[in-house]
Image (cartoon, rainbow, N blue to C red; front, side, top):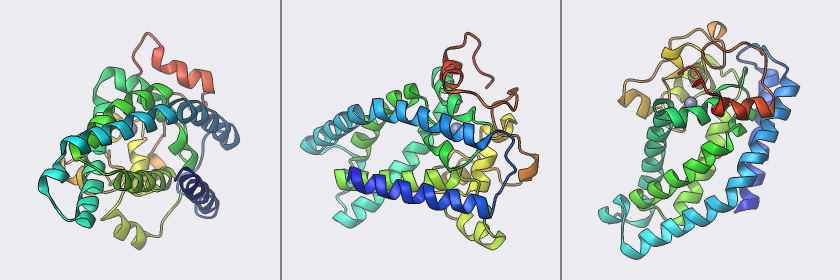
Length: 260
Ligand SMILES: [Zn+2]
């Protein structure tokens, strides 16, 4: 599974990077080369450190819930394929809440801000997560899999979807207007997620979805009517100079809470 994930991740990242060159959505303000290196180093630190713990904790949580028959999907007693689909939907919806909390709770925002401190968005921003954010999210993931009552197979499918969709919506890929309309009706597109990375607070604290675009509509937090050329990517009050690895990670521990 690890290998499948790696191959799909590399193919998705590679094809979107090619697409970004052919059909860019926003004009970059920082040095792409420097940003990409920084994003890869942050990803290596974060995912390298947390991956093993994540696997152990989450698998145990699933087994714990399985033994006790706990979780919404199990309680509903749906046939296996429907149960798996429902589990994927519920995982996507609960992740929406987690992302929303990351913008609302001070300590979570401190770590999540490192992700938003990228001054441009491209497929590599999808890898840029503070090790602190990933470590805390292991706990949330354990609660999530128990509450949903997900099987290991359904969780693996969802995690693969999250990988593909997160890379897609962070990319700087411009979709044809019709495709944007059709896809945007169902999933989060790069244009919509670009608004989530705006420095303007009203835009920054909107569009929390990962896969489906339904949840933002449901909570009236979907913002789409923004000209991409008017968007400055980053944190409120941030300058356009791209941050290094240490600066990005240290941001979370600065005495002043990063502007929220
Ligand atoms: Zn966010």
